Figure 1 (cartoon, one colour):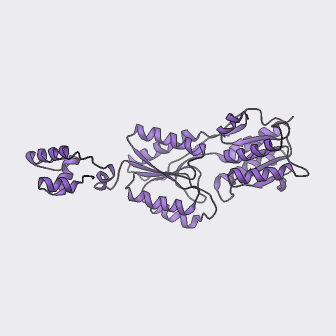
Figure 2 (figure 1 turned 60 degrees about the horizontal axis):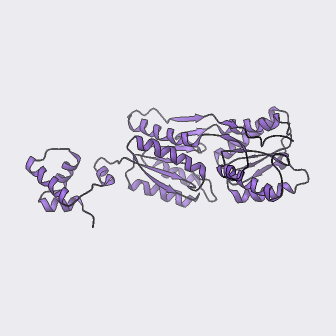
Length: 338
């Protein structure tokens, strides 16, 4: 059975406010009363709740972290970065995994308010049924700092740490062009998401700059998930005039593509060159060396906590803090034209 401040107050014969003053070392309490309270705390083995402790100051040292898919290595890296810097700053972290479900995302935002948290760090999901007109209002009304990581929201201006997705896709496409590819396909994510739309912009820019005709038949809309990209790749293999190279717009899309190619006995890059966005660690286990665009998710997680600490330690309303990192290409040979 847990012990509460009220239990201690009843045992000593004082008010719960007096016990609270002793616990928080704030306000005057007679020396003898303080000693009796401390002795009862010791006798009852009372452990103060950090959340309860924070109620009096309307804030705890707890950060809420909301991600769309905790099983995805990419978000695991973001969480690793968040946890490291949070621990360095004495912060507790509570995690909410939404499974890319819009209703679960809304529920998580309501839940974090109960904890009187210091702030929210989140990567918005982009699953089916996401209604961002309905989503923006609870974000704005949460009344604590919100730090977005990796995925920005269109037409909004929250604090956040992002990667230049236009540049990442542009560089990946230019790499394929420089290798001699002219029929370059792209498997996008859900197009209402800013990362997906930005990556398509980068892809188009690279082709246009190189005076290569943009063929709509080589633009395939995925959903950031393995299953759909697997099916799309099977269809690509059976096309009359398939692309010679593919740009895959997430690590899970890359996994689906590689799975379909290997099942069809297609060699990479001999039969199909592939460049991915984000590292797909599982491919290393399979012995597949994939060239990819690295956007350092762990570092983004670290910077998100640093932004939160900066906001928390300053009373200035200078507008949102937004950091945009530069992507880099990790070359492993899968981009080659054989």
